[in-house]
Image (spheres, helix red, strand yellow):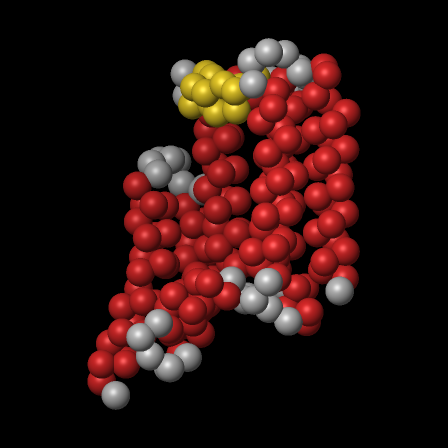
Length: 194
């Protein structure tokens, strides 16, 4: 119950942020950046999508579950991430912060750190659709357990990679791909041996 209340509070903050800033936003706002600067823009309506995504996440996550499952970390984390992205887009559009002026190495380090942190955090309890994906085709439940341990380890390795001088995204992407597909392969092999 507390998890549901927290998610609805975050969704309410997103509604307040988008509603109170909508009239002050310019006709085109930056929503995507790369090393050259702004690489994607959208109209001010884009800020209204974030509360809708939060509501959709809530219903998609809670429909097949029991009340007690709604306090796990992935359920709470996605709306907080949506709020952070909406806050960055609105703050940049209102010129409170200027994303283009932030150090590019700092952004890359922060994004790799955040990805590693999210993977380690998600490892505590894998989202139900992902856990079901790892066990499809068999009743063996060790694959999600293995996936949780692997995700935690890969998250820690990603966080360490963030501090290497070479900020290539290829190792990070390979680690993420391995974290997704190795548990699936592991579960299939274990089911095949049985």
